Length: 256
Image 1 (cartoon, helix red, strand yellow):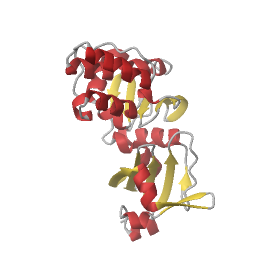
Image 2: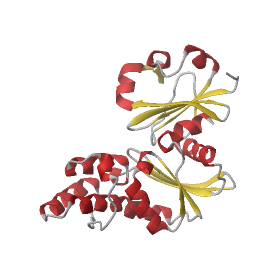
Image 3: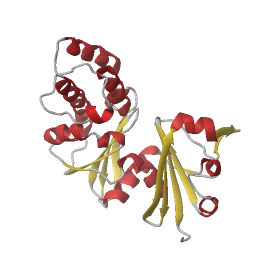
């Protein structure tokens, strides 16, 4: 084990993600439900968040002693983690995207549990970004809600992209009502699932059009939605690159 040991922590809205890197090599990745993790291992000491990382069992005592710890937090929430360096969420995700892909010029689309970020990276440097954290209608939470309405798993939802039923509501809550209406019209499940996936594409395209680039790096849990990726590929005209660990991208960026 070298001296260049780093721990990255991404305290997301839905999942807390952890990465241990030895230099540029990923040693370990882990994740836990954020609320459960806070309840079991978190406490406030004055104005700082204290996490019992040793008690969590994610890292060994030796790793915690030797590693530099960097943390980022969801959206606009400020995280002051005791004993850790704090960086912004956008910096963590851009750094992670560069580390995982080796690219220096790209547009990044990060679709997390409750927000969506689009960033333009040129020459390895962040040039500009836009974030949608006002509404969860273009996030993983929206997919979870729609899967519940359709009574299917996320894996099932993410497998359908052909002949999508149009869903036009721009709000996640109204979208549920619209989807129920389409269910009552008797459309097949496959087309309804495809329609849900297409709504994500329609909601992120205005953000992507602000930062055109030959390559689009997609991170976050929604990057695992194969149907949405197929629909987005047909729509955006960019070469899509998905890192090996899209869900842990922010944690990897913290540790890079």
